[in-house]
Length: 573
Image (cartoon, rainbow, N blue to C red; front, side, top):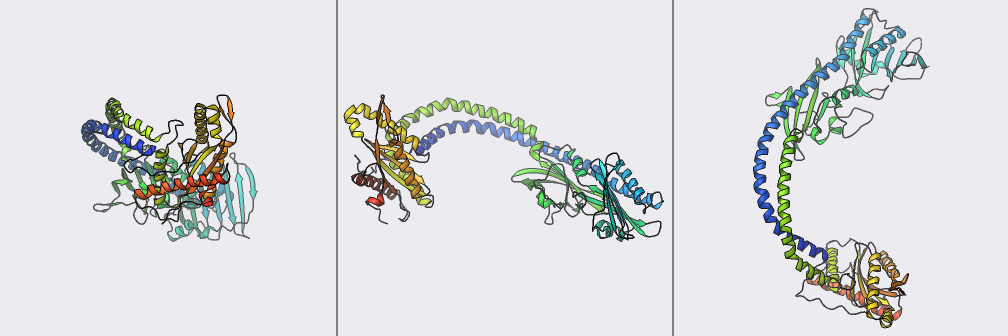
């Protein structure tokens, strides 16, 4: 039979299991803390002083290592890029001397192919003329891709593919609007005849790979200007930087005067297709910290702009070291080579030694804690046992009435601070037919049945729900859900878990039913401002669920009755 909900004793504070666990853990922790801090503080202070001295030495060694690294990288990059200038000059000399006929596309294609065979750094060799004539030879895997544009007697484009043996595998005459006279490498070279010009990095239209074109303009044997050039893919510089011996998290990079991300020793954090990205777009936080507002590496020294600067800076609180160096790849054309790395990469050995010392300290602290822990545990164990006795039903091992009310008050308090966190429902149910079992088989069997019912209910509820026994054959449940309808359906499922199949006790099957009363926390009522009012709200919720059960059983057993269906006490705002 259902019972009424009594008022809580104001002189007794009942904690939820979570609150009790935190309280006991905190007490034990305080007992251990004084001992551990005394030991650890003294030893750590001495070790830290030694570490700081070692770090200063290693930081200076790191700076010198980065300086040496960036200088070697800059020299290698300059040497790599000078290859393009040398090939342009060789090609120009061949044309000027008549050894290569600028108007014989077949012979010139063979010459360009020979230059590519001898210079693996290059991707393509090309020639453009004022009438739109164009000869272009580039690598195509192990073979060659040759494009020839003849403007007379009418414009005609021929694309020929050669295999690695130099044999023609295909030839086509596609419609191609490409005009070399509109390209930056052509127009820039014409404005500075006799000089070698560099384009900004761009994506080649033929291969769709990023690179630069180095070109020069000169007069042909017939007096008309010619523009000779070579394409160099940026991937070659990337492969070169990948060979640089860096620290585990260090990065070497190359950029031009416009801040383009030309190459890096490791893949950029972001990938941008179709164009050459800027450093600001693909750089990691450590690189972006080295750039000015225009996206260029800051090379300002104490006396103005310097050719090489060393920086020490913080990224997310972690110290980094960097060296930036300007490299003149061609008179008037300068790129910047940079190397940066976390200082921890250089102080790894010191960190390892310091970690070993910390491990020793930790072991000492652990041994001390192991010695003190039984004392701390023994000191609080009686209180933990009393708490369990005060909050646990001895028969079923579920929460008792006091613990349920404490948990409900905690849930109501949470609803007051988070009113849109879903629905909070309270269920009180009792067993239909339990009295017959008790009278027929005795209280011992009845207790076994109640224990089995508790186990079955515990298997039916969710982890976030709270299940307890109020006394006799009466159980209570605190349920959380998204909507009231979802909560009601879940409660009906829990009731059905009892009814669905008989309970087996001592080899006998016992068929039971269950009736439940369900009350919801009202969102429309003002949130209780004090702990006392929160407890009153919790008691009223229990009372409303209990009233729904009592009145519902008089109408029909074996179902879930909502408090709003049967009426009952309400909380006045």
